[in-house]
Amino acid sequence: MQANVAPAGAQSWPKDSWYVACTSADVSDKPLARTICNERMVFFRGKDGAVCALEDFCPHRGAPLSLGFVKDGQLVCGYHGLVTDCHGKVASMPGQRVGGFPNTRHFPTIERYGFIWVWPGKADTANPAALHHLEWAESADWAYGGGYYHIACDYRLMVDNLMDLTHETYVHASSIGQKEIDEAPVKTRATDSEVVTSRFMDAVSAPPFWQMALRGAGLPEDAPVDRWQICRFTLPSHVMIEVGVALQGHGGYDAEDALKASAIVVDFITPETETSHHYFWGMARRFATQDEMLTDTIREGQRRIFAEDLDMLEQQQANLTRYPDRRLLKLNIDAGGVRSRMMIERAIAAEMSPV
Image (cartoon, rainbow, N blue to C red):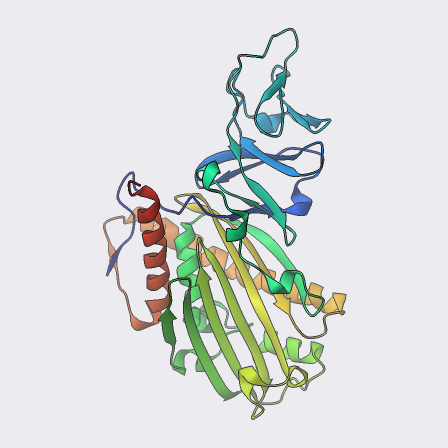
């Protein structure tokens, strides 16, 4: 069994890690406020166009810097006009000498794969090489479409949700769920770098979402298929799920591309507070990659599916908050989520241990 909440004062997430803060398009000519791992941040583009992240706190009177504006690649506080550069150094302030002003905390950022990544921990430990390589994000062999939800629940509940897809039969009965998901055995394995759960279903009918995908791939939607789900958790809180259907009897997961509709469900889960997170979702696919209408159709289908998850998870969080002393069951289907939480806890412990 597991407790509903962490002990008071306990750190709930690794901080020395790269998290998705927003998409590149979210940071344009205005500052963007976002809370990540309980750190209030403001994002803006500097003089060279690179994205900067500072603590959302003006050293003068404590106003949120995000309420200001960007001028010549510097952030101007909307309260008294204090100007801060990309590194948190005060550049000027009307009628004041600023040489002795303290710097505002700066958070390392990387812009890559269409996202802005931020390191909320110790700035001197930020390592660009630690950012995961995402092949689908820089290859013409893949097409991607996605979106964003703000969800009022502990980010680990979303990790649990994605590492055990048994819920699809019930939460997503009209789109991706089917009874064979319950019936197929689940395998879980863990390495030092990832936790993997997998489920394979042979000779099944494609549910509505996958019928649409088969049509998009130029394959018969009513043909029996072999279906797979392979969920991969990596630190700090990312889940990539290999999913797909192949015409029955042609190798399933290993079938030739022409005989299957396969994709990666992309899940970047960024903690906001102990009971809320930012959820960046999408699907990268290897079929009909030039079909933009199909990309839009899949995005809309995913949006509806994840809205169902959102409602369930927020209701779950409300119940756990209401009954903090209740203990939850751990079953064999929970192994992926449990092992993922163990990996998170080890990373937190490593950060907090004395050097």
